[in-house]
Length: 129
Image (cartoon, rainbow, N blue to C red; front, top):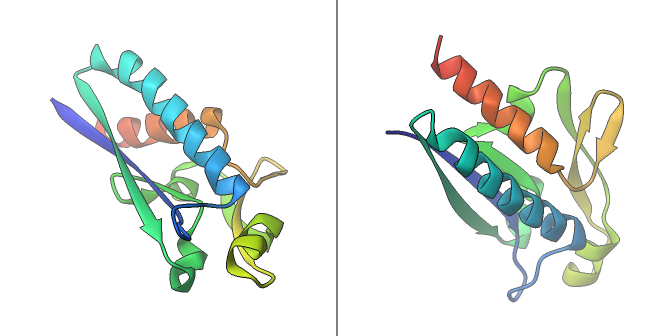
């Protein structure tokens, strides 16, 4: 059976994360649940890895990797950016920029289930070439 590992990287400050990372984490879990059901018939196993980051690694926070490849590299015309995250600022005690995902003219602070699923299928399609 082939394996697709979906890794969620996020800030962890004393067991807490920011609102947008928390929302992304929920979306990752929902996407994994639906992908696991869909992909089992195709002989793929979906696994989850959570990587907690410190303030020093904030630039990597709110990131999803599929078998080590950033989600934004798998989605056509997607790119990462950042904007001020009030929730991170509260956790860290200073204004903080947090990762966003720009795709098809929209900026996503929390990565939606639909984009996680789309990236997963893009990765699987690349493996089947």
